[in-house]
Image (cartoon, rainbow, N blue to C red; front, side):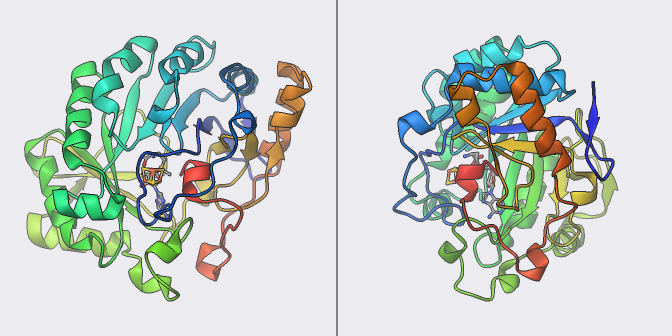
Length: 332
Ligand code: SAM
Ligand code: SF4
């Protein structure tokens, strides 16, 4: 049965960080030396994740996204996808990945029941990609995107975090990709969370590029953006299309037009904490009860507590930042 939170929002979506580890170090997300990994035994085992998802599905959560850290660095990730795809009530199973290992796994993931992927890509320039990610090769990501299309993980969406002075000069180039190719590029306003010091010391507001500014730049260079729809949605992006474009352009505006009043999601961290809001440090421990033998019914009561305690909105613009985790530990 579907459940609503205290502000009448339908909660039907769970994002699961399957690991806090990553094979890149995007400057805005993690410091170059990384963050201390949680020990292996602190990370939820696959059967524990399955129990949580069974409980969530019984509460009307029908959409699950696997994220991280980098989900594809966790051993046996294809097996987890297979287990989750068989849970009754899960209608949409997706993944957010940096794409580095995607060409290796796309086909197997699709066969195991993954329906679609979002691939993070902040630049089209090989040298800049390496600088932003510390050592990544853009060719691997582009091969991953191709492989995802071949495997039918559609629609493939490209997530681009835009930061002034890092990649904002590429907004028009990235938007142009959607004319000739079926690229669905989603521009995301940077949030000063995680390794914000990697980007700026103080004065972070100047580094935020609002969707309004991006949109104006795109329209000045490439013409009007027309409203569009992009397959299964329900997320916070708003989509547009350039005249004659094969792909779409989306904007995600956590700062300039926060979408909290339509928030439909919960998050599960890799170490088993249920997080009702990305940008609030409040968490409900599921790992301890799971390890004490909690069954689906018990986990359902804890998830219900998470639903009921979702805050109305975040307070980033008032400079209230979450402090206990980086984005790689929460899953974005
Ligand atoms: N490693 C995977 C990836 O990069 O796609 C999944 C985890 S990553 C934390 C999920 C998403 O969060 C990525 O698209 C990433 O660009 C985005 N992200 C990370 N830090 C962010 C920040 N401070 N503001 C906005 N988005 C951020
Ligand atoms: Fe890793 Fe994703 Fe964070 Fe980049 S954004 S460091 S790929 S978790």
